Length: 440
Image 1 (cartoon, rainbow, N blue to C red):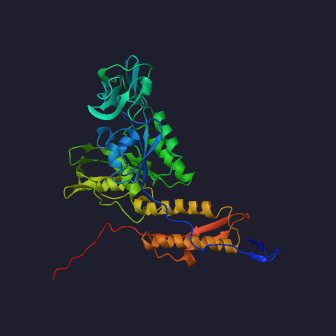
Image 2 (cartoon, rainbow, N blue to C red):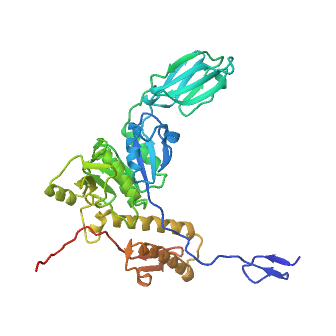
Image 3 (cartoon, rainbow, N blue to C red):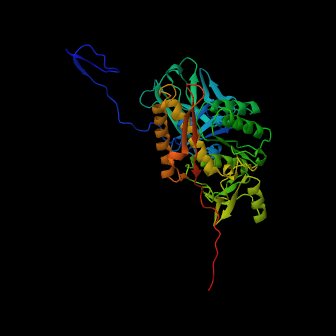
């Protein structure tokens, strides 16, 4: 057969066709998706000390054993009103509920008081009297049934309990599991949570607690991630304007839901973090209604609201039978000539965060170690960034972008370095209208 294959230089010896396949030049990077927030909770049930990914629309029972309407899952439900994904971390790990009737021992799948709601019955099978049906109940509701089993060894674990022991089963109308305990939560558990989510990708993290000792922990964590790791993420804390930092959103008050449930400021961090993560780069939460909220839990006068905004506090106000966000801001108030007011607004901050995270991913994934650091290579990077930023301009996240003047790429001091300058003008949302009405 004639020679064949691919070629780099024209040095082939055998006659034949040497063919290279390539695709037309196109941008490799895309705008990253938003919508993921992290949430640490003390729960009566579920996997402990690990990150569980919950996506909007998932069956919560399958993931953590709790129904989305269970009171214990309230803040998960609130977060998912706006977030696409919640990275849930159960802080506490207590004692598993259990019960024994020889030779059978039944143990709750997870620790916590929720396990005390479980009961197991062993009934004679109506078709084969030599076997049994073993039924697991949760609050008198059947959640699992295993039919025609004869021994303990025949039983399989289900979503709520495990079985142990050896020997033939015996009849019982109901074995109630007891002694399940939730355990306690210490500050170290929150530190472990922060360490666990550092390995994940997310935009916001909520601290649904008013514990004053925890807020500096989250504050310093966010500062480290933003300043040293280059991860433009935010934390949502209750009443912590002292942070005075773009990466910290300080929630001043909460809301009341239509069913009467009160979501105080600490609990409201879950919704705010979910809404902030879920907001697109061209979207502001100013005057956005808190889903299903009919009023705020604490009302403020006009002068108090103005003072709160100047102090960098995120708060809710009443508007036409709803609780709405007064202004989509963070806690940053110490403005300087190079760190201006725009950094206090979360919409422009989302643009900067996306550009930071996406450009880093694009460069690391497609250019670092793969593209020559010469004029051709730098022009490829320029073309990539031009396409990327044009996407932002097309959705009105930035404006007046001119790739000829707003992208500067030069060789660095070392042969493997490039210096990139990006100049952008963000687009904010209309919030203040100064109107003059002339009557003639």
